[in-house]
Length: 455
Length: 124
Image (cartoon, rainbow over all chains, first blue to last red; front, side, top):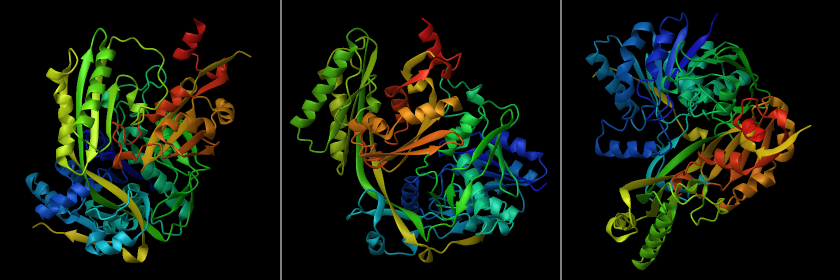
């Protein structure tokens, strides 16, 4: 039996810090090729990393590297579990050096660490060239300052990195699915023409990339969709055969649930046309996919079909987008809703009076405001009791930090200048990054693998 | 047969995702037998109406009968999405529950799970 086991340790930067520990325990005794993946790189994260790298050339990798890896590095090395992660962010080589430093700290010897480079378009293209590419999604680039521009690499470079014998592979921007598909191509020897297998491997990656979203988390709806022991939710493990058929499961004894429903929800997560899901490796068709319970907490997924990949690669361009200013204040008890509505109208009037020209959203949380539009145009909700607890929130985006602060401060001033019983003000002013997606000819992107030695 | 009108939430679950200002929401019946009637009733036009106040401009529905599930892709549902939304939920992650709550369907009562809170409500 030539099964590959892939466990997931994190589905986003900020995922539960120790989630991988039970996954590593479960994989430790399996006699097969095993991998542990971490997906920690949201679209905007790279811009923050790129800024860090400019100021400190040895940084710019994921700050979560130091959160996650110290808990597993020694056990993974001991049991032969290889780690594949996009913690490289804007500086995969810097991340690799940091892994070596951790290895030294833990007395781990002979660790081989590889970095995948080539996603960073600022290293290979001029800003003017980037601005000429049509934007397929997101904001217009105009003359905004470009902070980062990265092409989504496919699984090929990840497989190449594993072929070097590396115990840890650090990538920057690749597709999330490549973290899983790379190991599968490497072990099973899948080639570019094995489209249906690449499709199954992409499904595997898609199901794992959000961590416990496939194994019972982001799922519970008490009374409707109940999940046991969510506080101990087991992160997913995929077992993938050479023909591509795969089982999704989780560590024995962990909390959570792997069922048809949990797998189907994740299968369609962030998918648009399910017959044409574009990746650099394959165009995925989910139309014939079957999801079958093989045993409790073991679900079989098969039947994905693949078509040849597009000639272009998607790239994300991150631009400076000014500031977001927010302020919140609470009202509770008798007539709370009326007091909150009064507070909201005061903030709106004050923003007009002090000459704020950027659109300001003022809303009353507790009234399903999260479903509403900036202009509160949703049909009114059925009558609600006016007691209870409501929170007024104001938000603005501006190129000027001062404006963000001014709007936030109008909420703060409600303490003494607003309705009765205002309490619990919180203010938040944060720099913003916006993104645009462009398509780049494959020939312009050169992925390469470098082995990073102990320094 | 005893047909009742209930929120979609009584017979299906859903998950929302985003790309830019476009939202996708899967709708998955608890019971596969409910799929046909959901296909009939949960139309692109009705879903567009749920997101009209956000400025949504179009809805495309994809059917996956083997799962079974539907996938709705809603254009401009997110007021700019994480790039430029002023709301708390730039990703539109909560919108699956807007859809499940605002759309009602007429279904045979048997399609609602026996232990569902809606069954208990209907029995009262």
